[in-house]
Length: 267
Image (cartoon, rainbow, N blue to C red):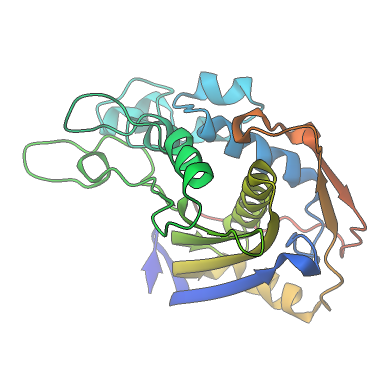
């Protein structure tokens, strides 16, 4: 099937499960050491509501600039450098409400989690329909419709454990997905530390998991590489609030991956 003007192979509803007792799911088929800080920086920027290229760069995230050129932003009626009110940061930290008061999902779900951990409604969504869908009378207001960031947090007070089910609308498997796995495995560890619990499992569902034609030979090479033991990631125990975490609070150890590989993508 064609995606972004290029042939691609796609699977609907792919799922992975990572038992975090086995290590941190940083893939070992190629070296992602240099990408880890970048993945964390972007994640923290969005947790804090970053919406513009300028705000992202303050967190060390510079790679959105190709998506927020004057030409691309103009398509959605946005000024240059603006990801739009439907992007991850505004959705997580300032979700619009009927009452007109922005709703910070991160803060409120963490509060609910602490007060009533047994609930099954600890859900965070990046999807604001009126901004993400082109519809009659209103222009879409996001340069990239959110691909990931749908989170369902499960707390188990009896065993003091945390599991997170992450749903990804669209996943470029060899490039974007390993990057996103870092972010949501880290998020699981962060939530567990915030709660004083142990991180149990990251369940990772991709609705549209795809590989582009230009990536086929790279994926074939990666498949040939024998997976290695997963590394260990530890958090600074002094950080207690979810929004206080920074990349330097994460320590990666025992990571012995195969050589790095740059996989191209049309996106």
